[in-house]
Image (cartoon, rainbow, N blue to C red; front, side, top):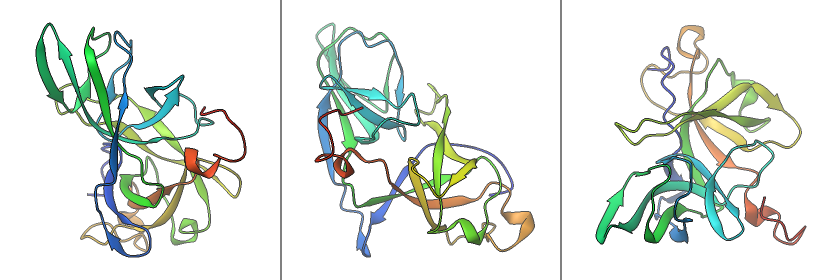
Length: 194
């Protein structure tokens, strides 16, 4: 329900333009021993050719982490989480990197109909769960701006208890968003991926 704050990252929704979600994902390398957890639903970036979790709202997104595969101690592993410090070979993140993809994500505070398709938002960089594998990312409602930010709210998710026009239901609304600060939006502007 949108009356309870339970941030769980970004979940694929559809492709902009009305197309269904076609799972536009690719694999990107993860540096062995990387001292950071990545959770399903985290926004990830590129750092010198390796995937890293978003750590600053000014970074450019590669996409959304959907899981990983790696070989540790000779054992092939598939996981929803990259465990911090894992020493592994053949380590890859599965990333939904389609710049036209939209995602469902919860806001950390109230939003209104006036925010939809009008304002951009930063991301709440919450810690994920090693039990569920889910991210702790969400829309940072207080960051709404007409300037540059990571996400653009498209609409409220059409489900019972999530009516953005009802005060009691919009405390922590579930929103459909698109990534505004996607790396593909900056590809010709500069060479930096961060």
